[in-house]
Structure formats: structure tokens, C-alpha cells
Image (spheres, rainbow, N blue to C red):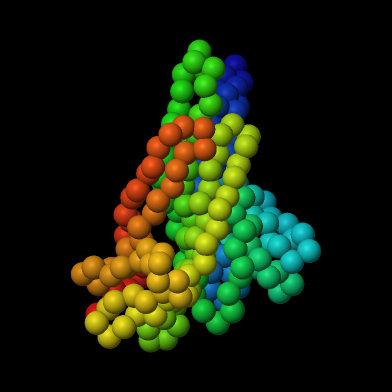
Length: 212
């Protein structure tokens, strides 16, 4: 009887905590065409499925109470793009180390009795550097979600770092990066789709090195 109760409780917890993984709890690295990921949510663990559709390597991540899969995926040689949390990135050369980080921006959650839409937005950044870190390339994708509806907007940046640690982008009108005390920062800005707001935030990009 006790085993039955424990099994039923485990099943209930699994159903309760299963669902879409939240991008903001993950950081990823690509090195030697292997995608590795770390999750910072303690209540649930990631369950990962992947597939190759034409030249797009699709990684689908859900989070479950009893999930056991780690994120350590070889990227097929045929893949030229990566689809992660509905965001599509061009895969860079295999001889560089790639960093992927998510930045939370907006979370609007209405009570069910308001009959109003929820809306969340975040931004996913893929970035890699040349040696000796005097230039970097970045892909930024804004991801919005309301119920089952998901929308994205992507931008690309090719930037040089001057000896004075000033960043010069290919498009000077939208230089959103800057270096402060050896760390690289990004300025993000988004507007609402269903609500009127202008959200501006600054984040420090997590990197395993500093700019000296």
C-alpha cells in the first residue's frame, strides 16, 4: 500500500511540474560541435529531444520533476543552423567556442478570471570571439510568448574591440555592447505586443574571461 501511495505521489508531482522549460534558467556552450547546457532551476530537471530537419538542428527541452537527461549533444555535421527555444541561430565555425545566454525581460501574468492574455519576453544571445578577443560576432533573438503563440525578432552584430576597450559595431547606430571593469555588457530594449510598455534593461554577459 505504501509503495502504491509513493508511486501515485510521484506521478502527481511529475504531472504537476512537467511542462515547457523556461529559457531564462539555462546557459549553453558549443565547443567542437558539442552543445552543452546548464540549468539553474532546482525543482525540475531537463528532458531533451533533438532532431535534424534539413540543415537545422532542433533541440527541444522540457522540464520534468523526474527528468534525468543532461544536455550534452553532438551537433550533426550536416547542420548549419541551431533551433533552441524556438530561436534559430546560424552555427559559427567549429573551431570557435560559442556562448549562449538568456536574459529575462518581461513577465505579465494575469489572473484567469481577467480573461486577459499573459505575455512574456526574453532575449537569447549567441556570441563568439576571435583570438586574442579583439573581435566578436553575435546573434541576438528577442523571443515573445503569449499562451501557445511565440514570436521572434533577430539581429546580428560584428564588433571590434579597440585597445581602449571601446566597442565598434558594424552598425554604429545600434551599438548595444559596452565593456565595464573588464566585463562585457549588453543593453536590451523591447516593446509590448499586447500591452503598452517599453522595457529597457542592461545585463552582464557571463563569460569565462575578462577584458584586460
